[in-house]
Image (cartoon, rainbow over all chains, first blue to last red; front, side, top):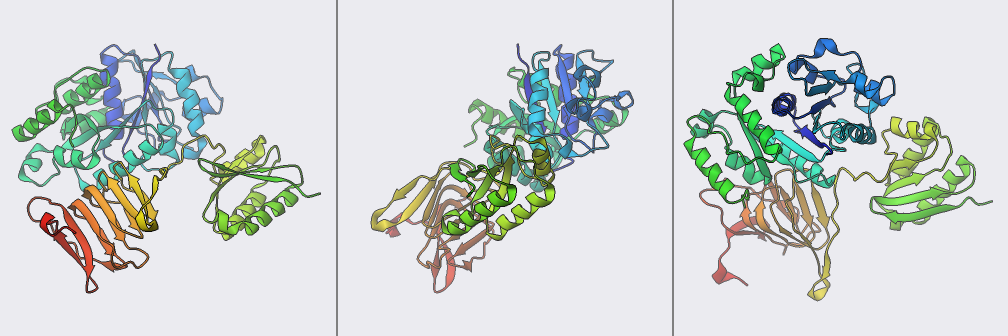
Length: 269
Length: 227
């Protein structure tokens, strides 16, 4: 069976693309799927740090593309999850070292061997973004419940449609239920009303995410935190399971509205 | 010998294929063609197929600025020569044309209306970064999100939420109107006059904006007063 290529992107920086990639990958690998992550953020690599594999990098993505090593040699295998691999980005080069067709060729080589190829896209709408999106079967757009992140997500969704990779799926990250309740933060409904695409995840703000990233242990691996649970659910939904949305703390209203939205078959028009 | 140049329309703009001849000759022939057909070409995006010629960055850069001087855009260079491909990539040009463009244009559904007026219909969400400009009326079934721009010579009718930048009657047509189910644009212009956009109170309702005594006014849609 040929694997699926999933690109995780956002437009705006710092909304949690890399964290989401690491966690979704770890969740899929925990479920027994064979997963490889590609860090497409050449020059500003982070995914290796969050996965805790930084000190094992010998070859990188650009080495593979420029033929300095074999694909196998650049794939770092996670010791905790033997089904999880990482192809790190080069740190000493920039986005122009790779072209969209290089990425398509690379993913075509990986597809037969893996169930999932996850690509961590850089921020922005330029070359790096186009490299990351070119080979994808599914595009996941990450946004935060704030106006600027949602604007950028809207722009990115338009570009994804233009590349004929749509419709994208949406993950809303770093939700603070208390603030939403007070009306100080955009609600899930507000975001969905503007973006009008399918939601596949709502991740609450969680301090464990930061400590996990610093330690190189994705938060899904500890199995207790709410954010970890949310990322796990995203992985299951990507895998085709019907998973009800996590009840976010003191946020009965949102959950009620959301399950209503879900009963309507995911349409919010 | 006059070098041959072929120009053909493709989905992404115009594709120009260079025939036999030295780089100087074909370049000269191309620019001549562009000058002769300036009206037809205006604003076009050009892709050139240079065959197996190896081209240096300086030469390609010079051709690109010549093309830019003529209000055209060179966006892709196709070649079998690795040198040329590398040169083109250094200059930030595409080297393949099968890749979809990052900014989309939509096939326009043009209809002749009574009185020879023109209109286009879009049936989609206009997202941030999207812009349409049309000489006639623009009708949109879907939302116009913040960051999208719609400019029409005539009216703009939105069956959805209008939240981007809207300009009706852009050619100076003071009779132009803007109608939307939810009219809360970032900016609203009619015939070069900008409207103040007051904060919405209460529930959205269909509204129409028009020009009255040189000022943009927005009124809720009243079926009894409908023309």
